[in-house]
Image (tube, rainbow, N blue to C red; front, side, top):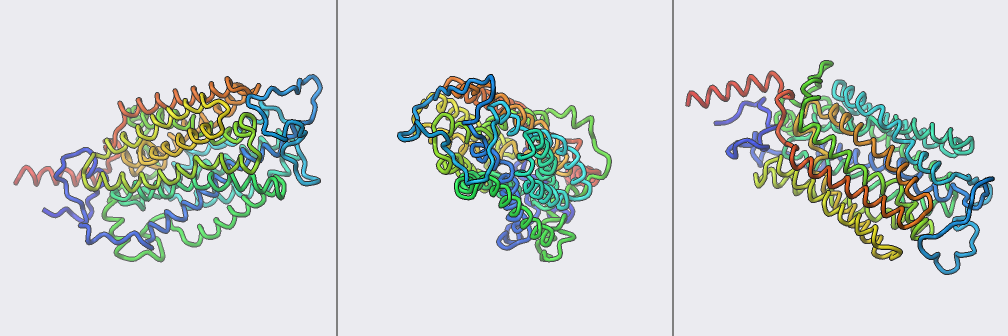
Length: 510
């Protein structure tokens, strides 16, 4: 029996009986190629490439910004190198010389840790408000302004650094405030744009821009620092963000209903397949049921644990490449970027595979999310532990770090998009909640790393990798036990409840 036109299939392929039919037959599905929904994913991809470039450029530029030869009264500058220096660099007073007139600053390891973590103090504050407002009004304005505002602030980085570390800390906090709305806004937009059978591939494609941005920014930052000086990094990255903002505001709409260039076939397909969940959630929210939701807490805990290792590497890997392995700045940036190239490829591929498994009913949504979370977390943690015992072997350390982050990319089709499974209509707000908790490691991990590695010893870095691996494994186990891909009762709309009652009555009568 055919389903009514307005029927939502948000939960259809999840964990219910295997005889549910798709709403729209395969030959009626508009192709993704050149579609409005694919164009949106591509623009999001480049947007997140920009914001992650803006986020990580300080990690590499910090190596060039700090003058390790400056003496500070009362401070012992005798450096014990964990690994032997490359031939010819033992007597170099400044391994990363800057062009004339480019300033450098005497920031110690602790100060650098605080500056690298400053971004996340602001990032924490706007996640939930950004998700809530994006779910009510639509996410395009918030995502666009978040990227554009951060790009403009990035242009001021050299000035803030010249004024002092406190000013740079404050600027990075403001940048975090701007970027904090971007991921919740993305999730709120996909709640209106992504057909359930295409969620994994569209969302992983758009979100993989984060890894691609890190992959591009890390080597380019190193190259620009050594050729043009570190201030040019922030001018070029900020300019790229401003350019992206122009394209975003011209070509993007909050909803397929208001998009000026979408075809009627694609608009009807998206609206009918998503159903009532593809509308704004209004001002009121089921806060108490959310607070008591075990699947939501499973996402929160798992993302916190997974992000610890991710942010540890994102902010501190260039420092490890410098202080322990002694790569020059250009090699540092390139080698630090390799893990994110692998993560970008694996996360994008995982989205295609996950959608295929769900569409063919090989596994339920719940099982698909758990499988991809486990496969992205456990091997990743194992390779982090291996890094801690790689010693001074450049080849082993880089190989293990690359494999760890590459395999971790498969989690993109697991816990990191699970909010839209359990509550599509509230997905932006839920991502704001989970990302707020998930950002705590971004604040704490660089500071903890700074304390562990104050003496630049292998033992200190071993602690860093062991802690990250242990936390990662814990999160994967929590999600395996308590995670779910079912739409939660508190997220079901009245229209869907009424339709479900009609379907139940019809099945009883037949």
